Length: 110
Image (cartoon, rainbow, N blue to C red; front, side, top):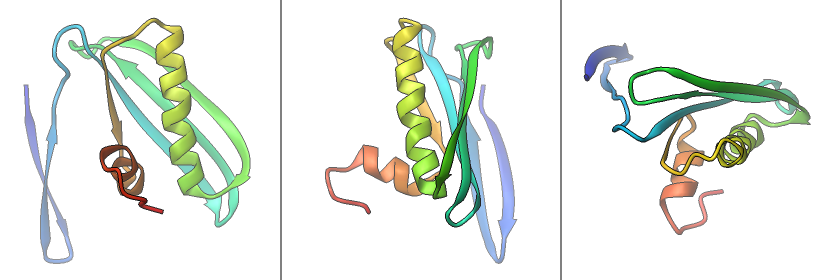
């Protein structure tokens, strides 16, 4: 199942595709947030199966850092939780372009 959503952002239309993982895969949505720069930060994620069934969730406080640090720790903690749950096929989804670039290229993105 695919849903198409159009979002207007100052003369630019973004098409977002929300997809569900294949059977036997688990989708992990990750996010980190900061109050200030640097400021108090936290990260968390939700684990869902291929039929959108709830598998698990976590969140954690990370002290005073930046939002980018929170996003990276979100990925690290999500992968650690996936390993604890015995998940081998995971699909990570994150809203930070720097974090996505860091995991999809061999170049230094920072």
